[in-house]
Length: 340
Image 1 (cartoon, rainbow, N blue to C red):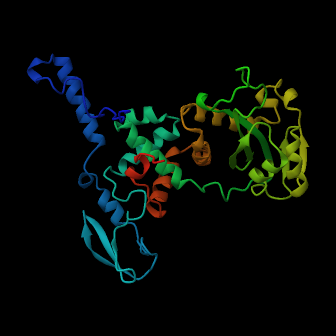
Image 2 (cartoon, helix red, strand yellow):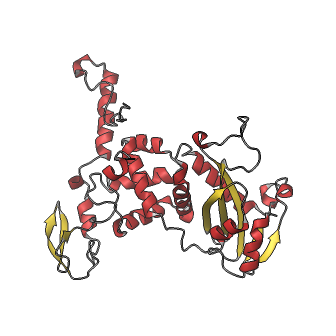
Image 3 (cartoon, rainbow, N blue to C red):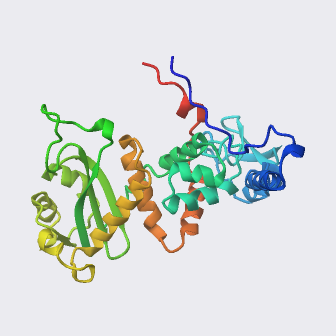
């Protein structure tokens, strides 16, 4: 029977079981400085001032049924509690959100977000925040839920650059030929990511199938995210023709093989190439992820690039989203054993 994985505690040191008298000065110094740093990052909620912050946010409707017929109803753990006269339930501001029943301070999400936006891997982020890897992965999955529909309303306009990015599947998903060799070219071993950007700072990225794209897949991915009449700047990929025809786009076509010979400054496809370079760097920082989450990572990538100059603004937007969107993910729900 396979043993369950239990990660080592981030609060521990190699000298916890040793009496301080047996430690040399440097070991004792490292032990207590490390623990001080850990507890600075893991304060009790009552010590962070978080309750005052949450109580200052207006609550206008029931977090359970959506009714506006609510009244204040005392406090729970220093948070203002509300009572809904329609559904007869009580709730606090975090009820029904990703922070519902949270034990770790929202304050820690600031550092978590900044590590994530800085292309930090899950493992690196957990070490920096001194959280277990399972906790960090739990938070990441909450982010995925918050951003699930983030790209739905993104529209590209003006000069629109599009191209496909091919990202390799994990080694355990690679399909080989009968002779044991991998298929050549744009095979089913590479996920196809349809990507677009414009000069207004908008980016859109959608994974749709694998291998060389078809017109149907191109339309399904990008057809509802480009304003009709825009100018499409792209390479000679034939599947793009459906976008030009149906959306009545002005089409400017370049030979990607010739463009590759140019430096970035003179490459007319450089805007979309830069997006793909950043995308690959970001995905590679999480290279071990399950490809079922590829679209989730693309949603995160697009969100992160909404304000690359000030990552703290994106952290603010994500935390605000977490406090207002009715989304719940329980720890047990994520890690409970999968039944057949």
